[in-house]
Image (tube, rainbow, N blue to C red):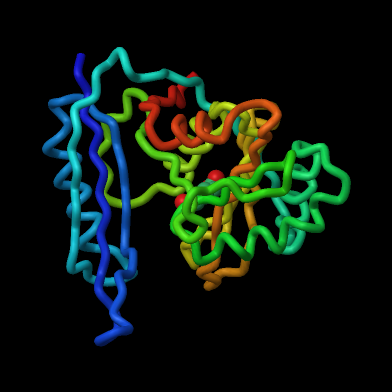
Length: 248
Ligand code: PML
């Protein structure tokens, strides 16, 4: 069976004259069967047109055919949940998990600064724990994990479901060559749940990682250049087509 990859991004021009720039409004991606293409395309347009961040003046929906033989099927990471009393405690739990996964002395002291650096980025930071270097080809843009969806996902939901999208992304990221762990905080000001994920830890949902109303969020991919080449990891994150079985 052939599949189709659909990617949507919507933006708005803000500012005047020299200050004019494009502001991201909404984005989504799916990998679906031919029969679902039209319905998913329409749901994506609706998602772009009804976003709380504003009315887009540019919507791009890209549709590409994907051969079944090029798709890797992955089992979703097992999910655990950590309830916390405050966002400070949530961050603390997250840093603790990352610290253990990286196996570096005092690495957690560096994490708040790294996290802050991700706030203005569209994609994730790719941080090499072996050298302490950032490996994204473009530091402003970061690295984006793309071409993934849930297997047998037939819904054409026009609203974002943070958890459903995040478990798919985190599963793909955890399987990238040389990946050690991922730390994620949403940039949605109303969404305070974040996670730490890796093949060993699974997907650890931390229920509060920032204050409601805070629009700062970001992703750090912790990578180990002793285990794989950065190019291999980036190629996998950006090009490999992955379907994640979330029902196992
Ligand atoms: C995002 O907004 O893209 C990040 C979503 C994090 C989801 C965390 C969870 O609910 O498990």
